[in-house]
Image (tube, rainbow, N blue to C red; front, top):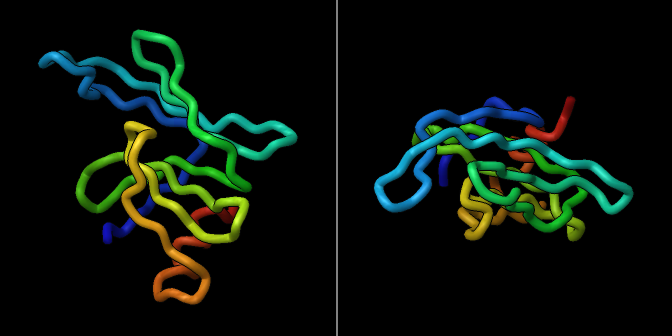
Length: 107
């Protein structure tokens, strides 16, 4: 499991892999509505959104990658890969490391 830091609501990442040996700029931001918060990634195409959670933050992993931390509607913390397709880690309230991950959502 990676250690995540630098929680924020907006980030611009240069040199983001965009497929076919191409790289470009990716903009991440957290969108809020009455349904909750969700991550949005914008590259050169249409914005890609993730599902709603109670809270969401863009974080940096100690492996140098960008992740999305979500406090889900069910109370566990989910760490999603920056591609917004795959879950990297899922930590429940009874597991070690939960308080540290929960602190990512304090503003």
